[in-house]
Length: 439
Figure 1 (cartoon, one colour):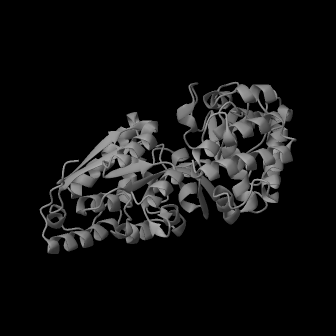
Figure 2 (cartoon, one colour):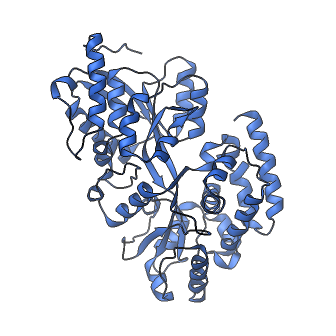
Figure 3 (tube, rainbow, N blue to C red):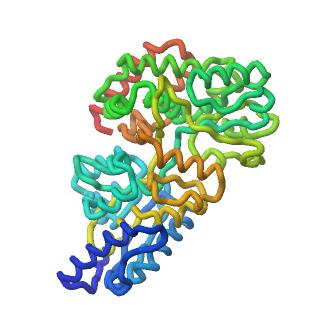
């Protein structure tokens, strides 16, 4: 790794670090209370490995461009790695040559890096984060009691997308509570359209459904406990959530019935709802759903969205998949960029393209490109309970492996949703084995 060169005296470093805080805590959106001459004193080159490729990489390039308006002498070299990022980072760390920064989507992987001492704390960014994010978001970036990351980009996975025409035919509208949701489903079914499209061929869609139900029904503390396997999968709270989930997974409720749902992949589950006439009225998944559709459909006219319904009076809650920016080294340039990513200016530079949500509550709604993007983003920034996708927090062999662990066992549950206790025992056995191995 080439050594970084910085034109700073010891006194200059302290002044610049104070400046970094000022940059992230400006009082008016679009204005930064930093003196350009001081910002220009920060110089260097940053290596940054990320999962964003294609259009997403282009959007992040705009974030870097906005950063460079204040820090023109810092060059951020972003390398799009894609889904192989965990392997690439693990190999680089083992070889003693990790990048300066990275964006990681798996909290479990971050925890492993923290435990190995590979990551650097970012306490210098805490004041900026505290001004722009609710405490729940700081908690998502905290490991072993220290702040290690900024959750820069989030995906709202607590959404129900619906076919506008199917709802109009049935004479129904979005539901806010679970009883109203199931009544809505029954009315839609009676009108001649299966209420749900389930992408059961991709097991992660089933874990997302369970997690949204469990978060609302069991609460935040239990969700975190089950995520860490401090609560067993045979716990009564899991029993209750699986019984609620089984209400959705009845064969007559799903496009293609049980056999069809098991064979339906995620893109097809979206197309089932977005096409006209639809094969199903609703698909429950994240804010990335419209970008998955390959059929022609117009937002607001053909499809729309509402938040996942409340259960037993639960407050606003959002499950997210989040990209957390972490650092393997620290110096004034890295600190400046990491802190900048916690500002509304950084979020707005990406949000204007859509497909972006953030917990940064100081980002104006006007920067989002359309009404649906604004609605989804508002749900993320205003939620009282924010959790990461549970399967991303668990050992990969249990939480994120095709055909086994959670993904495979929830597919079994889709085939036979009446076998609640049987699937609980299998989930607990698989979880115990994965946590014992630690991978």
